[in-house]
Length: 244
Image (cartoon, rainbow, N blue to C red; front, side):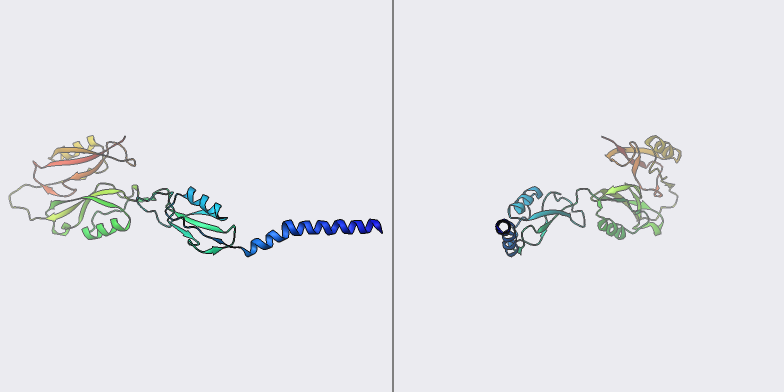
């Protein structure tokens, strides 16, 4: 009997200890709440630390669209919002900007009206850095894009700058010899020089532009534009790619 009584006492003591050390803290914590701190515009690391100190857990998530000029480590929004009462250990989702600019094929703007080209560029977050005009003798080319500095289907990133040339119709004067400007886009500089010379024209100023996506020494822009009608003494200006 004494052994049974001693065993019962030990069991009772064990139950009291478990109740006091485990069950009661769980019960108390279930009834407590934590206030979500405001971590907007903080670095993710600092925001995560602030939430951890508040008894909460930070979970990183990304904005649905890449935002130009926004640091990828800054908290843009948080769910739940600051000031809300939540249970301890609750996940707080912190939204930051995407790290990499999305890549996509450069659209084909040639042959489109200028307004259409501008709207397409804006929709795809492409910057029209330089819009020039070139004389054409075909009325149907008036107001249309004649050339673009980055060939279509070239992989580019959000915020890329591209130059275009728009046709401007002018009736040709009788008796004046006109030559059609050949298409040398995508050729090497030496190939372009030969094609221009063979067409009875002369090579004009050659400028350079950096590109990480195209082969060095490739022609990416020409002025006047392809299929423009020019006089034999009209120099053809080219822009070619250079690498760092």
